[in-house]
Image 1 (cartoon, rainbow, N blue to C red):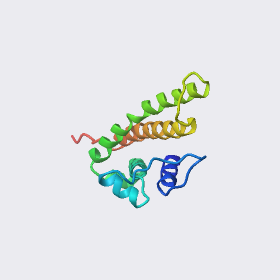
Image 2 (cartoon, rainbow, N blue to C red; image 1 turned 60 degrees about the horizontal axis):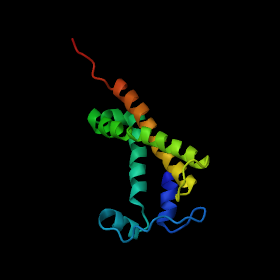
Image 3 (cartoon, rainbow, N blue to C red; image 1 turned 90 degrees about the vertical axis):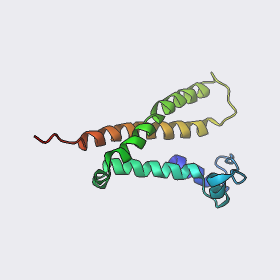
Image 4 (cartoon, helix red, strand yellow; image 1 turned 90 degrees about the horizontal axis):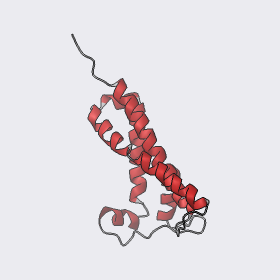
Length: 138
C-alpha cells in the first residue's frame, strides 16, 4: 500500500518530500491515457496484486480454477529476490558505499514493496497450492 499511495500522490501532482514523480502524461497507450486522468498504471497493477493475494487466502479464491491464481502468484514471487537485493542496495547507499541520484527513501519503498509482495505471493501461493491440491479418488 505505501507504493500505491506514493504513486497515486505523484499521479495527481503532489510531491513527496520535495520529489515529484515522473510525468507520464506524454506516454502513449494505456499508461499515457491513465496518467492524463491522474491515475498511475503501476498503482493499478499493485492493486491487482493485492486482489491476487486476497484471493489466495480467501475461501472465494478456491472457487476459481487453480491455474488462474497460481500462475500469476508464482510469477509475482519472482519479485521477492529482486526486493531483497534492492534492500541490500539501500543499505549500501545508506552506508555511503554506493553513490546514487535516486533518493534512498524512494528505493526503500520500492524494495520493501516489491520484496514484501514477492515473498507474500510465494507464501500465499504455496498455501493455496497445498489447500486446493486435488485429492486422489479410489
